[in-house]
Length: 402
Image (cartoon, rainbow, N blue to C red; front, side, top):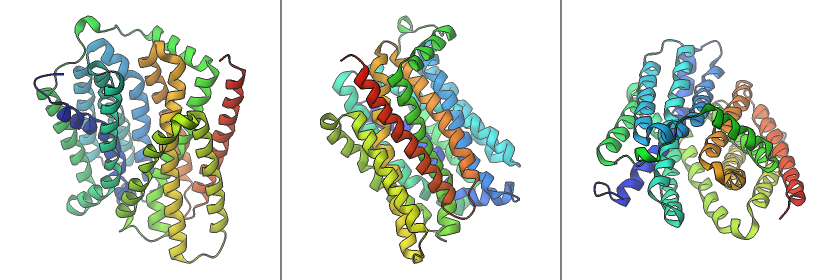
């Protein structure tokens, strides 16, 4: 690849770029109560918008970062995106109002899309076939550890410096990553291979994707699965704090759940060849419906606090596990007919599903009333809708030529 960076170092750098998103979301979870009390004392639930505003910005940035890197090169786009991320983190650190903090988080999300999206393009530039798949798998395996430790890192930072210190850690994390890349990784897209940025071409690609029935359904189901994940993330800290009085142990339980649900990717890899992507997604959503209905029924009973807590931890794990069993398969289903516009398709799928999922999660999160009802109802509605759409996809496939 290059005489300046070994394959192992390259994988570590890519994993760090991937991890920027998880670190930026999950490490904020322990800070939400304190931020709510300081910046929105009349409605502390609004602090949850710190998560969905970042996701919204990330979704918008996802649409543009890939095409921009095709036109101007990989490293310049990462430099600009990282600069926006760092400046936005500094503004968030200095914010005296929740509104300014939310604006900064949207901008931070836009900037964060650059290392996440462009890192995948760099891998595609330098590797192909099974070697590319192997590198992505190893990097993603490292990436899955970040959600397990990010809340603990956030809690530690809050204990030492208060919630504003988390934004300092964001700045340092991004600065280390971009300096490392700048010094060690050569530009992977040669000038003769760059493609001009053409907005009409982007719009035409999006229209083509949404005209294809299987792609369209896959994007909508992916939106619902992301919506379930984002809704859970926005409400999980208040659930631990208000309902189960476990705010102090929340980072450790969150880490445990993240590690347990990480096995979903391994199970999916073992089953997908034999069972198929559509069936696995359908089964995962069906299982989520059954589990969620069971949780709703149990919550209607007078359970002991310990049993009620155990039921919630199991249910939270099932939601994270479902995401691991569905997201990769849905992305592959949507990409399958779009090989001729793969780069643009990846950007459109990521942007549309992420933005719509954030739009679903934000209002549900604001409905938190000290009970599980808004969360369980929201997850059940999204699961049932997604399951129905997957059954519809099966009927579409039956009508399509082999």
